[in-house]
Image (cartoon, rainbow, N blue to C red):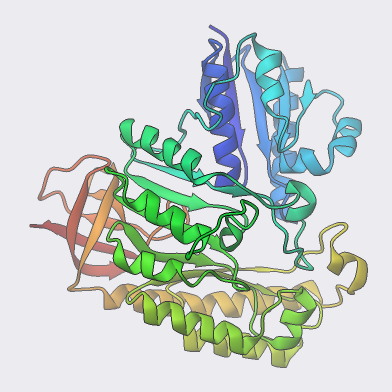
Length: 433
């Protein structure tokens, strides 16, 4: 049996595409390994990321490493797919002629055709999971219509298009039958889900979808990622509040709070509207944990604007937050129309200050959970404890719950944990009940 190694770079949306390609390969008799060390004769597929400068560089480095192994005779063919090769296909072909194939975001099934003859699975969403068997990601749409000034995603993925509710529900049922319990719902723009489907009804398509998925037997956790603040579908909130298996968690990238910066970013929302949005989310879904992403150093962010951002974070006390410094992306509105005139050292100092503030807030949130009881899904066993996550923690990016071994557990178990203490971002506790 031939073997292929798939290396998936970037976000969970890329990971879903890698898993779909793996299912196609496996159906054609190819043994697939995710992110493993290639062996002699292995073919290598690098699913690239093209979102920001650092991610591009990591993808290029991975391609160069694979090409070097090929030139040394240690691997077979090397293929690129994904966002970077979608956007820079011509440049990569010129700079890396050693690649055996370049595929983008939407034609990557051609790799399976090159490696072995066979048929595409009848169910287009069929995947071979690369995650632990108890959790996965469900991509409900692709593309984005927002065209924020700094973002290249619409240039890579094209216009927003949604999957039908019935198809998504069929995928979830099949995954439940295979043992998956936790479903992380992902999209470039969760808020726009279904806007292109022509659905008529009293509720937004997103509310209809999540309500449908929450009613599927065996779905223990549903978690929502990457909502957009402008045009937010408020009727998702009562769905979140009413279903115990819909996690009280929302990932919504806000980017900034200063009105002038938001206007320059073309975010189509004001500071006042942002504050009201957050207040309503917290009011209608008590106990919700909000994850957001913020940006520093965007053109026009003076010291006053940055201090307003710091004050915003102090007031909101986000349970989960990430941030990054602005990096100019080719062909975006900002690259064409705004001067990137904030020095890199200033950007870095602002980023460091913002993240230091958030670390203090996150540690305080964790400490405040001592004495409470939370629902936890177990990810793995370590020598001294079990490691799990609460409903407030997404895989890979959020915090862990370290569970004592007083009770025998295994990966995928869901239990109630009494929180004994916190250790930085993480919690420690023991099983109750």
